[in-house]
Length: 209
Image 1 (cartoon, helix red, strand yellow):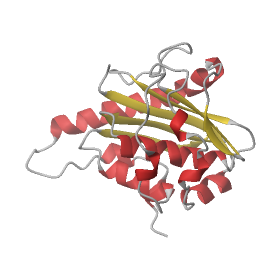
Image 2 (cartoon, rainbow, N blue to C red):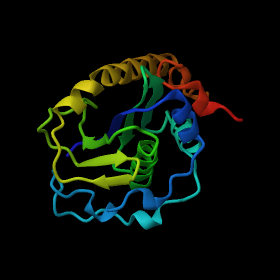
Image 3 (cartoon, rainbow, N blue to C red):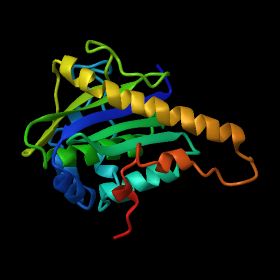
Image 4 (cartoon, rainbow, N blue to C red):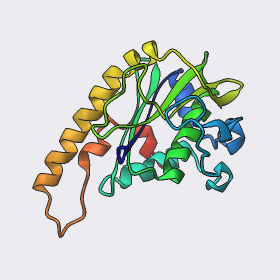
């Protein structure tokens, strides 16, 4: 199993809804069946860590801003509003359950503001690439106005296709971060300028008011 874990989604919603979501506080009740996280997928039969242990009271803006600030410690975050949708492509070095589960919870909260059911993917892949639609996904989350739930089955053909441009954006971000790292003085803080580029991170994520 890879030590690179990914969460991705393309959630169609209005710009106004995106901004409302950034300031919302998705609670653990948004996902109705967290104990079924792995059912039907590659880790079918495994029991996920207790979701009740997650820190509460955080907004997506706070969580994702912290993820961006951690770009020098094994994360990479693409989170933007583009062409009528929230686009997220998130990399975690290792299965950091608190961060991964919180990311899933935050994206589940975005589904509440969408007009139709949306899909959030979780998988492991050393290269960070999307899997094929019938690949070894770890879990699939269906999110909508009535909340979110992990599902055992879903045709992912259209979901994966819609995420291909987001995947490319993520790899562009990774390339730029790698270039920065090559030029970086190890005695100085890593600036991660690319991680703050509005092409990869919506400026509203870092807004203070």
